[in-house]
Structure formats: C-alpha cells, structure tokens
Image (cartoon, rainbow, N blue to C red; front, side, top):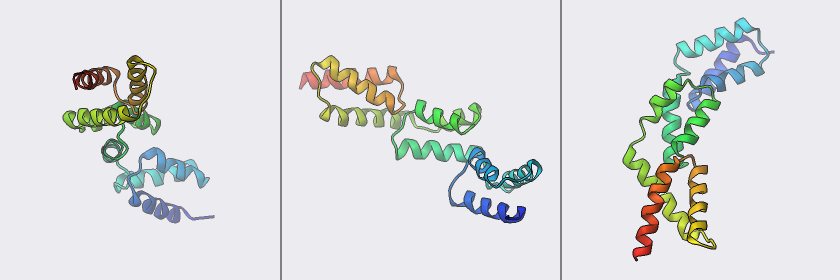
Length: 157
C-alpha cells in the first residue's frame, strides 16, 4: 500500500500534466482507499499548492472545447456541471468566449455541414442542420438566425 506522501506526489504529478478539476483529483484519491482524513489532507494540499484551481481549469476547458472541439456554450456548461464546477465559476469562464468568434464558428460549422446534408425538402435540411448544431451545444435561437441567413443567401445565388 502506498503512503500518503506517495499518493500526494502521484496526484501532484497527475495534476501537473494537464489542468484537472477537483472532481478528477478526488476520484483518483478515492481509488486509493484512504481514510477520509487523509483524503481531505491530500485534497487541501493540492488546492493550497495550486495544483488544482477550478477557475483555471474552467477557463482552460472552455477555451479547448470551443477552439478545438467546436462546442457551443450549452454543451460546455453541461460538461462543466458534470465535473461539479460551481455555476458562478463556469459562467465566468463561458464569458471569455468572444461573441464574434462564437458566431463565426457556428456559421462555419453550419455552412460546411450544409454542403453534405441531403434532404427531401429545404425544411428537412433545415431541421437536420438545427439538430446538428444543437448536438454541438449551440443555442437554438442563434442556430435558426444563422441558418435563415445562410439559406437566404444560397437562395439568392
């Protein structure tokens, strides 16, 4: 069985490799079957030494999921909630997304998907594109607004 300091060092290394939230670290700690007091001491030490910082994790998570995975706000907030990130922390991180870039990403996703989407009617294509963007976590009013502009412009061509 590992000692408390060995577990602390292993978790410090784990948290240093990538941003981790408290929930991730606690799952690792629980897997070691330590006493509740030992778990608290390790958790407190990781927080105190800034190996775990929920705000830093949230900002990083939001940035990565938006820029690389092209997720919308709804999906990002849902995933943060699954990791037990407090709403005030996740909301603050979500606010770091640039609105113009957000709309540009959604527009680009919808334009690209429209090229490969087939349907019996324009309404069918519209619904498929709405479902696609919704599954990526974008807000329905934005999706509808952008789709109307895209489809209006393609009708004029």
